Length: 171
Figure 1 (cartoon, rainbow, N blue to C red):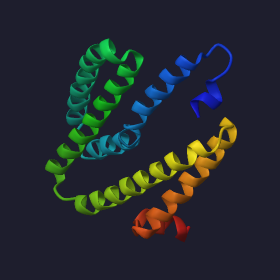
Figure 2 (cartoon, one colour):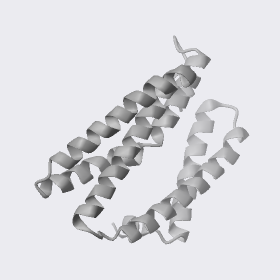
Figure 3 (cartoon, one colour):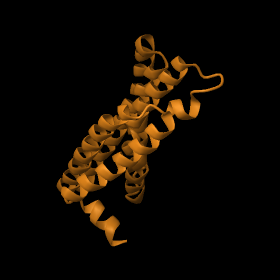
């Protein structure tokens, strides 16, 4: 996708590769970036502003330290990896603190669902990896690979009886 969008003009193939690696590292933390606001709101609803603030300071400190260390070996991609590690750390620290504060909130069911989604994602990635080399034109490679990936994910999630897919079909 990066080569399709940015692979022309002033972007050299090396620039496109660095961008793709950086986006790959950022993608690891998408789930955490999406869920942190909800966890923070849970604390705010409990009249607790200190816990999320302290956890944010800790994760930001880890992010800065890792960025300084990883930039030396991974260049700009090290910044993306450090950011993702810091955000994922913040997510898990908030989750742990919330669990300690309010107790069980069906965490077992949540982890079962997460496991099913991860398994469906791995199957999707495998299918995409198999299909991608079959097309030489970058446009068709992107379109068909994305389609195969989407269909593989939906089929795998359905076969794994993911509750999220059941809710998707109901709507």
